[in-house]
Image (cartoon, rainbow, N blue to C red; front, side, top):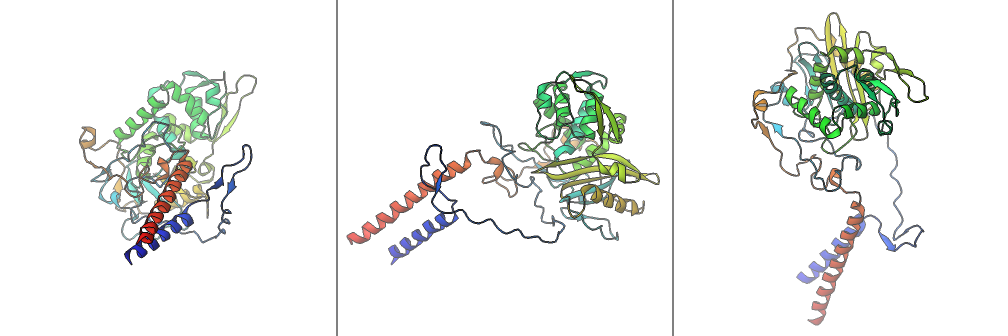
Amino acid sequence: MMRRHRTAALLAAVAGLLVAAPPVLAAPPVLGGPPVLAAPLPAPAPTITTPFQTPDTSSCPNKVAPPAPVDLSEAPAAGQPVPAPLGVRARAVGGERMAECGLVLPSGVPPLPAGLTPHAWLIADLDSGAVLAARDPHGRHRAASTIKILTALVAIRELDLGREVVGTEEDANQEGSRVGVGPDGHYTVDQLLHALLMRSGNDAAHALTVQLGGVPATVRKMDGLARELGALDTRVATPSGLDGPGASVSAYDLGLIFRVAMREPAFAAIVGTALVDFPGFQDKPGFKVANDNKLLANYAGALGGKTGFTDDARHTYVGAAQRDGRRLLVMLLRGEQEPVRMWVQAARLLDYGFALPVSTEPVGVLVDRAPPAEASGGAPAVQPAAGAAGTAGAAGAPAAAAPDAGRHGGVILAALLVLAVSLFAALWWRRARR
């Protein structure tokens, strides 16, 4: 009876593997011809449209790391390890309530505006740093091009704005959004910063990165400045904000970085610029560069901001505005452009913040310097356990997958099938002999 149960269980396990496994090749494909599948591919799932629901973050799904990537854009280069998640502090930077993962609101405030899509957001006073309201402020996500705020801050502090930079073919060939930097073009650092912040030019980001010592050196400088300022959820993967291994940021961190950057006159002037002249290169004439931040042209009192998008980060946004002598900033992470555009969602949050009485008790504060224990090299952070849920690079996470993961999976499946058949044959032979 025991042998029969084992045989039945083994057959059920093999059947389960065959059902769960992707189609495998029935025979080696003919050279130059299409592969022959052992079973037809399943029909695509029907598209189901459901009403939008604001995400629930009360269970702290991103306390340790951003959501898993949707592709292999964050897979490390060959031979490089998957970066471990950043440590989580025992005490949240910015105050006790900044450790909360759901809505963080003062008592007695009105309901939030409709149509908010971000998984994490924050409203704060640009001058005092008082946090007026937030959702999952220290939840970890990806910055996309809003990390260019930190790139610009490093460049402004280290480079002469009048320095001349000659464009290269490598600048022009950068992936993603480009403003039009070209080989043999002559640009000042100031002009490249305009292209970086107004039009999110990855070509401008690369040209500035070269002036800062190259990509690895620039990333180290950006990470160092983030730690110095107290942005301890932040780890930079690329100066442009393109997805890369280990990228991490929070709404709290980007809020405090933007607040510090807005104290730099050059930065504040650039993000508040609607249109600027930009040089051409070789035989190409110069042209106008328009700011892609729609809030600037459509919200009374707008001071400027920065947009961002990648497949892994989704839509990100930071902006600021002033009204009746009060200046507020807003930071949105992992949002969508529906049911309304991200800049409209930012405008609604700004309206909400301005409507709160000045006497409203803040729920936290944006710092501009790391807590003493961090600055002195102490260890206030609690490292997450290996393989924690939601951790990029944990076992089975897409970030750790190699480009040939599908091939390896097929080999493993074949080996399991051979082992299962062998065990079944052995059990059957033992039974037959008895």
